[in-house]
Length: 147
Image 1 (cartoon, one colour):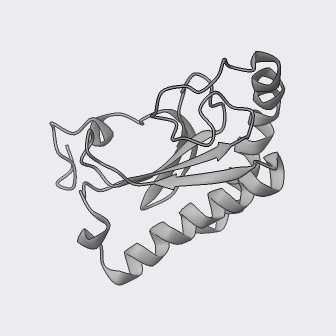
Image 2 (cartoon, rainbow, N blue to C red):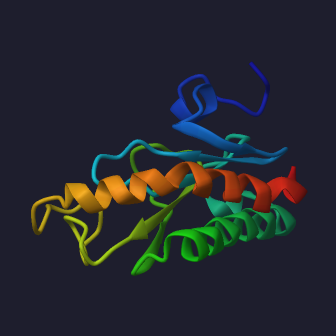
């Protein structure tokens, strides 16, 4: 195990989802979260618990990648809103959630971690799911310069 990883940390040991892009310092994965097909995570590769653990340059790199994933989601999927979150309460490894949200999703406008407000719209979820592979490719292409 590399010195920058921690044996007890799930994000040091596992990808954390379906790989979309891998750079020298970060990776982007798509989470498999029922009801939210466009749920991505930007994960810092080395073990760090907080954004302030990074140097200013590394913080800027991290946030630039988060913003680029958000930009692609907006351009490709036209969500009602993009949610950004970096909680780390359950997994104390620096990662950002970048989630395309829609006014028809089961939880909107509440958090994806809140209780649902309505039934899932399975036809719309399926329509969105059909666009996800192209979105993954667009994210990878947009981030190619960061590798």
